[in-house]
Length: 303
Image 1 (cartoon, helix red, strand yellow):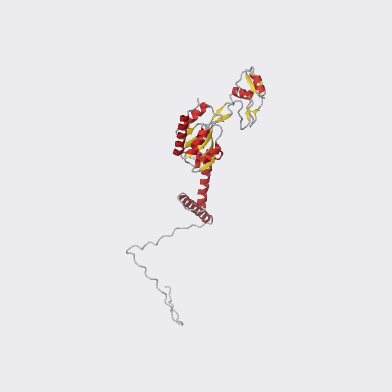
Image 2 (tube, one colour):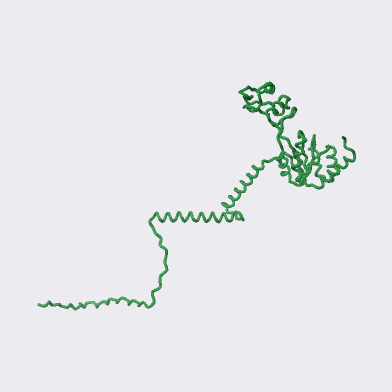
C-alpha cells in the first residue's frame, strides 16, 4: 500500500529530527540483504545507532531541509537500497559495529561474487543419485565411493565478477556452501564536517592494536637509551644505570682477582689504652773525641 502524503511528511520530519539529534551520519547499503537478517542486525545495534529506511527521494528531501549544510556532502553516496544511519559513535567504531554483525548466506542465482567461488575436493554428505548430474552441470567432477559422493578435484564454479547460474546456486546450496557475506555495508560516514569513505574505515582491529603496542614499546626503548626523561622512562633509565654500574664493578673485581692483588679495607687507628706508660726514648750514643783511645781492661785469669 502506497504511503499517504501525511505519512511521507511525518517520515521526513522524523528524519530531520534525527539529523539534528545525532552528531554522526552515515549512508549504508542494504542491497541483497534478506529481511530476516536486516531485522536481526537492527535489533542488535539499536542501542548504538538509529536506522532510517525509506524512499531515496524522501531521505534526500530530509537532508535538504534539515538545516545542516555538512550533511549535503552525503547525497552523492545514495543509490539503490540505501539507508541513513545516525549515531554518536565515531566513524571507525560505527563501521566496525556493522562489520561484526555480518553473516554468511547461500548463493542465489544472479548474484555477483567479488571472488571466485571454489568447491574443494573431498567427500560430501550427498547420497548417490541424480545429484551426480547436478554436480556435472555445475562443472564438478564427482564419483561414488561407497555410500558417499566424492568431489575429485577443486573447481571454480563461479568466477569473480560473473553472475551465479541456477545450476551453480543449486549445487552450492546442496553442498551447504554459504559463499556470500551479507549485512549493512557502510558507504560513507560524516563526522565533524568531514566525510570518510567506508573502504578507508575498514581496518583490522587486532593488527591495528598490535601496531600501536609495538610503536609504544619502541618509543619507550628510544627514550631510555637516549635518556629522554619522562614519567615512563625515568624509572627505567635509573634501573638501567644501576645494572650497568653492577656490571662494571663485576668486571673490575674480576680483573683485580686475576692479578693476585687483595685490597684490604682501611681501618682507623685504635686509641692507646688508658694508664699505659709512655716508652722512654732510646738513649743516644755519645761520640768520643778524636785521638783518645778507650781504656782497655785486662782480665786476668786465676791461676
